[in-house]
Length: 410
Image (cartoon, rainbow, N blue to C red):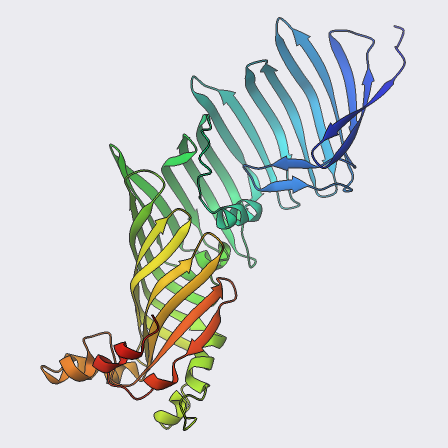
């Protein structure tokens, strides 16, 4: 069979150009090769992209029949990423995609099948491993703000079964199963289960009642989960119970309860106890006449109320309790620009100080309740959430609890 000569055309894409080679011998079936080195590829839903200048090639067979277009034997290859499979679509959109191999990072090794349903798509992913770091980074960077435009988004029914998923800080979850429903761009239901690298379970589930809904997250290894998501790397162990409720699918509020955990090598704790304060230059270490060791501090309880509105996370009534130290805190954990503005009171020798709060009458004036110790210092954390600036109020070092509120940052 005679072959038509190759034709080369250039298609402009966001961020660069693509060289396309088409074998057009058959008008209904064409062999196509793409050189994507000068093009950018973006998968916004997964937080993955290939930049201009990164070598990549794609080959596939394109067939059109009865208004339906089929891409078969599709193969995308690049340095550490690629995909292979078949895709079918019409002018109205995607009908199905059966990708036997998906590798968006070197740690990926899974397959994806997508099928069009009445109002959206069913997505099934399964395989040995997946790297969730790009997706987690996208979730953390999303402001959640609405630009006022109306967008029609398809519903998604996502199911996944993976032997391992990779997160940040060398943390891995194994035996992962997930069942997620998304409508109008909002998560409507979640059933997630996995096991941390220390062999402890992680379970997330939703309960929907009409327009309202509640999501719960539990794990007996809070530290591994915090490192996996790159939220905080200093926690070790801990029983985590998180419950958040919503009435509109966008704004959430609830409570975080953390028990029996440790905080290791947190520099800001050391700064609080060692920084000179006041005109006399005393620190908390000086005030209690000993060096408070906060290199590995154990806590029996941590609790806070969380409020998420328009991409901002606020903390109310926060408290951590240990036998050696404790703290209360409140404020803005992260706004839409990724900034923090939190205040609180730090108390050394917390187990001893708390006794004053338990004493009738005396505790009212000196201890100011169960969570305000006799001796402490107020502080403020402000700036970018990942690297906030610590400010200590020098007037608060020796103020009894009931008076210390006067000096707390406003």
